[in-house]
Image 1 (cartoon, rainbow, N blue to C red):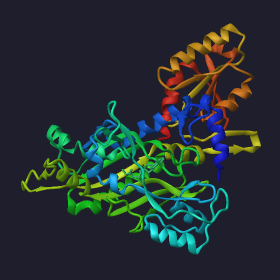
Image 2: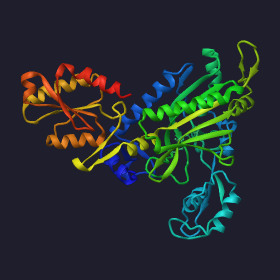
Image 3: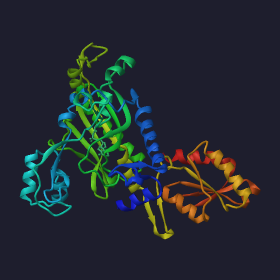
Image 4: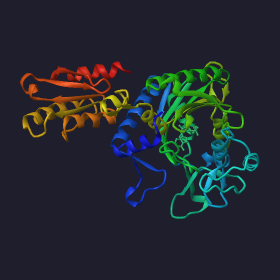
Length: 456
Ligand code: GAP
């Protein structure tokens, strides 16, 4: 299992992620996407959009604003129920999640237990603060995760709004707009990719638990009696998605939430858990949200959010199946899953599928100070970048350039040498096998297209 330090260091060194506002000493647990991270993330988002939105029937893409009327979060239950249990160490005053404190030290799952029950477990087992070893904690209290801000110059309750804690609500409150504009029949879905914010008590593990992150979510509206069939359909789709990401089956699993652990809106949730270096942890969630959200928004807003059956004219609230995917947890999983230490060849490579790698192809002149080689390689580079994310490198010797591209996962690299000037061929090297073959320059685009498509 690849360790987190190795991946964090690679990600920073090679420009996948940088700590936010580094020149001011950073901001804890906030990360900026660097040039390679942003390409990898974009490839994941595009693949997700294609697979879950474009290739699906009756699916509507969406992009709701982050700020919403604060009543949305009252109706959704987030202002009262979107809480984590907080304790403070009385010696060092570090704040911790009570359930995580217990889970880490006793290896039992206690998410969702009442504060009193958590306190009892902490005291009976004499749990210690992981920072200072102290064993006195304040009683557990519920801490709301919603970030607050204000619209306008007056900072009072009337002007308070929230940064959304999940993208989901933007889609629920637009349910009626979709019904009125597109008149879809059940089942249909609304899907969105966007930022969510949570004032997490203990963020960390690089980009695993963030306070600002991206969700890729679908609210799938179904006839109430058929929810089980559609829940299963989504389980199968998620399994296909994991295959597309080329994640080994032994590295992930399903885990059903216990009753105590279920979110306030869910009757059934199964997490897709990935084997991160710190254990099997939630990667994605698949929740059966019933009609909780539509019913509450209907009551709170006074708008009728019921669907009318086109045949029977019966009016009812559809039920919702919600697959929810964290983008940064996907990025972290991919970096861990595809990191390969190839000791035999003294190199490291990222075995990313070509359709996810930040660059599909790199182009190098064999030597950098031969104008004719540079000219021809630039010409090839310019042609290729019309078709693929392409990078150019003429720094250091050719071996070093291969190693650099291997380490960031570039699946193909092209070297332009003296023979290229004579016969219009180049060598193309495949990352994993390091095999090289000679190809005519005119064949390159088709060759790469076939390779990239063929591995999907
Ligand atoms: N709309 C449902 C919802 O938000 P969730 O289980 O709280 O459900 C969904 O979040 C997904 O969002 C998680 O499975 C995870 O991938 C991602 N996620 C949640 N909290 C996160 C955090 N603090 N940092 C990074 N990703 C997070």
